[in-house]
Image (cartoon, rainbow, N blue to C red; front, side, top):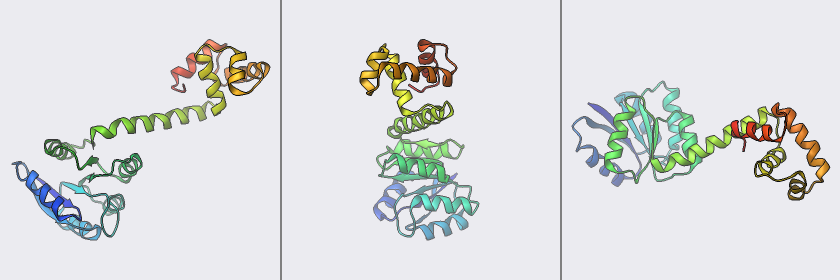
Length: 211
């Protein structure tokens, strides 16, 4: 039996979750809390397998509550269940130690499946949030790679234009530089990427995910 603690300051949400989870033979609601401090007490006394935690509630945010649960040594799987799909909240929740982030629009069957999966150590995200996270972390990875290569935003723009077949003159017009300046800058870029020519530099930039 999977024990679940419900944490939300809206009684109608708590009641709705109870009804949804009551339809499953292997999940039991072991308790509820309407604010952060009560939630922390319930975690200590009930030791639930899974905590469904609202993002915004009295006392502290869901993200702050997750941090405190982890600081107290709590091992329950924590799933943020909220109506807020902002990517910053998702990232902060996962960094704080949450095991999942689901929107309150999640269908009942998906919520139930997520609770079960969380007990097996699998992180759970609403499908509509995944693309945003992939894009965000992909951007961070590209930024980190460009820093390692010591390439500036201007260097990357020159590479992007070069990848489209633009000549040095055309790149100069697009970036407000002379053709000679672009030729010199390309040579610096070649050195940074260990490339022998323009085609090699573009290929290397693409391989590294820079452009």
